[in-house]
Length: 316
Image (cartoon, rainbow, N blue to C red; front, side, top):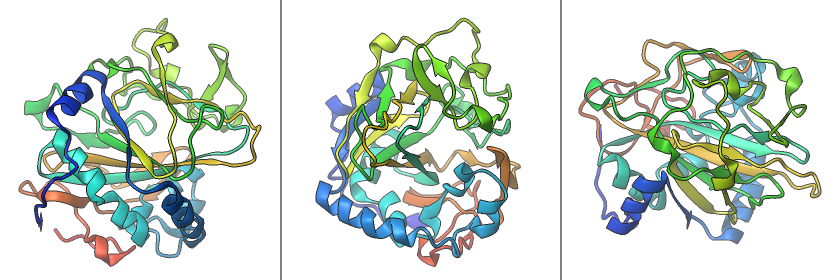
């Protein structure tokens, strides 16, 4: 399968690419005008309440925690299907990954009034919650890892309502061992304080994966990603990142949407038929990755034609 090439008008400049390599992130950059995003999200959030065509369906949503049911709605939502292929996003992604790229996962990240911040963390193989690698880079690129995440603000993201935080330059070395297993304990959500900040990881404690049990992230170097609706930030998942708590002073939620990209040479969900994490499980029977740029010369992964809108029929 091939996606025809386009003039990459939004590709990173040499200077931007150099900054990305040094810091591990780029942006924020505009994908939609703020009012356009507000209007779209007002309509789309109602459409997304209908899960009848979602690849994990009502059964998948009911079999565990809501985090899994937030996955991969681009496979049934026309707006999200277009978003993961948006030229303002993909041009920048291929500047880093090369001309042949897949979107292998999307996730919603809501933060409601009073919600805790997200733990400082890094993700390489994404085995952090399930204990099973969800992406595997080729052996010849063993020094690489992780995924390119493009996190788009569907609402305003501020320090007060829980915007992202990064520690620049921390993407080159993993501080966590993903072969360990975190213990899921939903009762601790919104009930813990770490370094004086209410933080958690959706019922897990990311400190359980630390290589050095005494490691403490240097929050003095952290930068906050304040964003307008329709803006996005691109970063390596191996970059140390977190989010502020929602202080609860506003009754408005913060909503982010993360789309994750890898080269076509990367194996997605290798030897995996079921995702098991966050206290639940979903079958990958109807799952397929989306080719967003170039061609797939490897055939490692089951792909889906995004025009099927929720059926995720593999094309390979």
